[in-house]
Amino acid sequence: MTVVAMWCRHEGDDIIGIGKHIPWNVPSDAKHFLDVVDGQTVVCGRLTYESFPNRTIDGCRIFVLTSDETYEVSDNAHHCIISSQRPLADLEEDIYVAGGATVYHLFMSGKEKLKPQVVVDCVYTGELLKCDGEPVSVTDCVAVLQKNYRRVSPFYILDNVESAIWIRKGEFVEQSVLKRLISILEQNAEIRW
Image 1 (cartoon, helix red, strand yellow):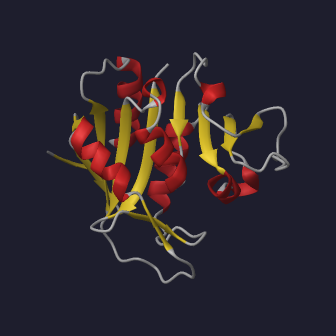
Image 2: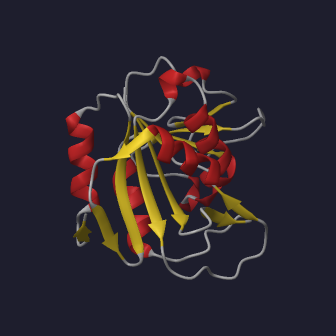
């Protein structure tokens, strides 16, 4: 099993959202996300789950991490509720961590077996849209990234988003996972080391 975390944060302040909103509109970034998780097992929090169109991603098995045991998913055959990481520990398939900030923090600082071996760090360099709500950031996760991971790819730049692949120091990662991520990120991107 390979655990991959993917986020898009704002340059300088590591904001990934304001209230329930993503404070930028970059269709190519949303497409990258959907391409990366296509057909994969995805773990996300309730608010992230609710941000997916129709509360689903076609072809994905989705675990919604929430303390609300009465929460209802949109597809009982392919989505389920979990209240901790424990049910994920015995999975054999790759896991893609899709946020929000609490879920990223849990994986980046949690149990060794479920810490991401790979992080796709996407940084939005444009202006934030005005949104209602409090800023949500992943600053603590970025600190873990910079301390415990190393960048192994160039920057893939597209529409004010600079994406790079990071691997946890000392980890072996399936080459097929890396090749798949690289092939998605390099589509139409300017590549810069």
